[in-house]
Length: 87
Image 1 (cartoon, rainbow, N blue to C red):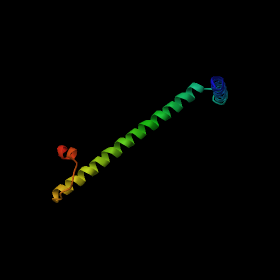
Image 2: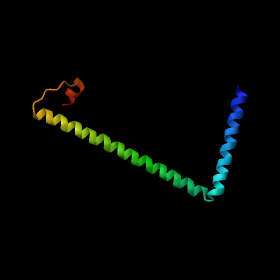
Image 3: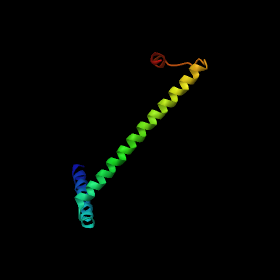
């Protein structure tokens, strides 16, 4: 069983080496290409983080405005004790 795993790992490493060698021949400036890919991934993560933050902030603002509207109109809602402590 262990020999099978070692052979599979060796095969995967050989394939990865061939792919990287092929990419180096296609992209002679491999380090520049890696930096561009890394920069694009970091930019995508930054944009996703900002969008997630904005989504949470907007949802929180909508929930707060709904709570204020129900308070102004005098509706009694059943709330959790945690929410009542925050109010």
